[in-house]
Picture 1 (cartoon, helix red, strand yellow):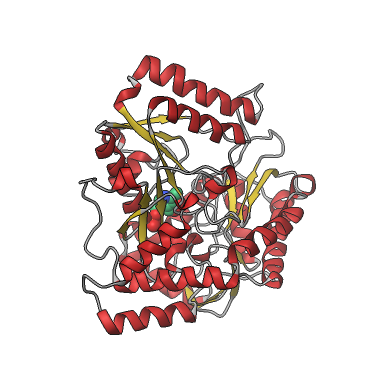
Picture 2 (tube, rainbow, N blue to C red):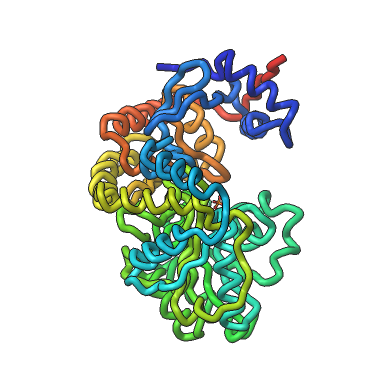
Length: 462
Ligand SMILES: Cc1ncc(COP(=O)(O)O)c(C=O)c1O
């Protein structure tokens, strides 16, 4: 299989998008990036004609295994009919109106499944971005302290507030640098491409040392810091899985300084890593949990924060917005959580994840452009490298993304020299196998054929 995409129907829509959207739609961004990277051909793209389970069928009838899953938001695949039915029922009964009972039912369920059942208070938001900001606002007001520690490579959303908390790439923060006043960014201890002479554990120890010895002693007094905002596994930056000593170190330093730990599990929470919450891999209970994406079953926007009783009970901070906690969003979430329990989806994810990793673990040996593979549950990622230098190579990772797409697998490559795969948690094993085979073919082609620094043809749809 080697799709020639965009096909004519997709091309017509993309062409319209070029005229009508800010920046000319994402296709143009792709093209510019490809041009910069020295592509020899037009980057493939498509317009989604129908999304069904773990498949996307484009307007021209090409079928792709969906490793996006709504950017990790569709635990039961695309357009799950049971969740749609629950949402439709809620819409018919309440439309969009306040004071409906579903928000209390959902709050009860969330508190019940929270780590250690210890996060007893909930507030609803619409998006992960809003929820991450709400969590930080809650911590600042609770501690009556103005600063927060956040990590390099983290992503908490693209509003001005959430972008200031994130540190994904400096390019992405351009012109917003000065909005970061209250955020102290520290390195994130990656497990690959780390400072010379260190292993992953030593790097993690160094980061903890940096917080204690540099930030707290040389930069700000620790009693001005309200807490630490942490992605327990770091998704957007490349699906990084922390070492045990890093998580232990964070807990220790937070306790010592009376800091709140906020776990942003917007992407990795609700089963993605094979436990309900990623923090459960380390048996740790954060003070505030940020929840989004999977919560809605991919059908209706809803997000939330859940926090400890003492932090949330009398907290007078304002967060949320008009549509937060809508009847439709709550109905989607309640049905989704019911299905989690009924289908044992978290346990399935853990088992399937281990099986997939048996396969992915062979990649660094099989492909000279794979530097490291990472996986926990169905949070799957690989660092793509220049086999000559051994260094992460953004252009090659984009090439793998494109070649996989042409072979029928839609994976993720964003601002990073990684590829990421977020299969639906209920993906059929044979579909998963087809998708992985396409990715492996893509790795083979890129390893063998790709030449960077040749200029691409610039696409012209007119
Ligand atoms: C860890 C994390 N926090 C927050 C967000 C923002 O969520 P949303 O896109 O729903 O606003 C994301 C999105 O990918 C995320 O991965």
